[in-house]
Length: 279
Length: 259
Image (cartoon, rainbow over all chains, first blue to last red; front, side, top):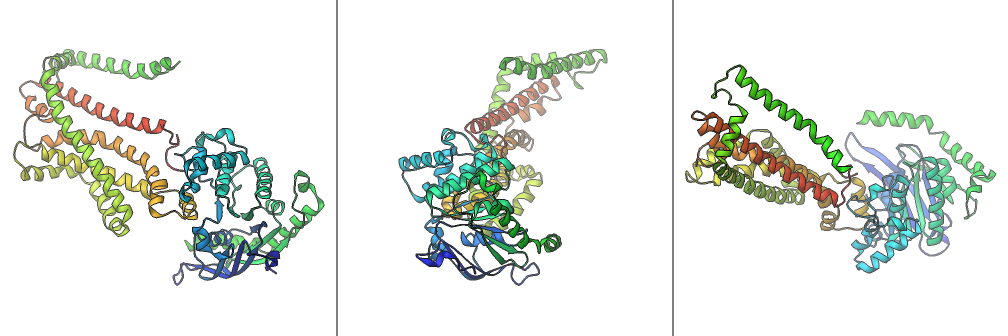
């Protein structure tokens, strides 16, 4: 089931095989964060990970980004081992906190990954301008991050994630802290940008409408231990706009994802309660 | 506009200060306090003007001790905090000790230092100031280097940054505001330590010793030296504030810190 359309040709953007992750193994605090995860993301595909708190969706994203290592199994990005892909900067990342560096200008923030890649100054500057134009913040290049609104900061973070031209974006609830209107606007912008740049995306979210609106596939996960319980094909076509949100097919998919999540609601509360006790 | 705001901030303390001095003057006269108990402010001012040359010289001695110690302690504190950052084991061994030492009045060590050098040497005093400043700077800068935004660290890891790059791009800029916080605490502490260190022996040439040596013979003159000491402390504090405002105007977040 998880062997999606990716197998058709070329290397998958992401290939997660039989991966599990155990934290604090062998101690009383041992947590089975992920069990038996198989997931493939095709080049150019937009996949969301959704599930209640503690289902390990952020952990899975960090495994793909090689910020942490799997306990068992294998993660491939662009057909390479995840650590190789990280060293090659094959992907860009964005988090719930924009994570901009306050002591750098907006443009210098976007340039940071390019600095670390060893690009020369002129090339960096040109690329940062291009990226800021893409997120429609060109005139804010010389501002400081804290002079920008939350939504604008998040757009800078996306520009930064895309600066090195990665084929894959890994995003962990990037719009989680934004208000509803800004959020919908940002979702539309993200889709536009990813279509323009042909970027694949793995997107972690708490929001069912967000997952359905953005994704070609929604991966539903269950908590403790985290595992994939269902993958919903959204089948709304790649072009999505304001009308998509009022489309009958869209509501049907929202309902389908909600149904898939329903079973965990009680467990989720339970798990959260236990989580507190554990600490 | 600006001038009006400054004026509004300035007049309440000025009015209060003048009123306080008047009350003091009045109280000495009305209650007929003896000069050895509390001299009149006008008398102190006369002594300050009369002795200005010597006060300035003494202030230069104490001030030089404080400044040399401040600079040396800052350099040393920054250097060691980098070492602690680089070598985790060293950090685990030394950090609790540094915090513990910082909590006790270590300037009593000056007596020990006095014993190590010649009687007229300024080195023990400077050493003492250095030590006091060193701990303040070390504790703060080490914290600034360590407490980096987790998102920043994850981002840098995703950019395949080397440890040196993480240091240059995230840890050092993050530690800069912590350094200035440390300096704001350390600058007055340096002056205080320089004065107090003089009470433990050595040459009778600084503001601290001149206060005690004048106390019995001419209390008003002793107070004039106290005034000098206040001005010196204020000067150090002002410099640390100015240094900080230079860096913040360079573009750090007004919220401070590192979110």
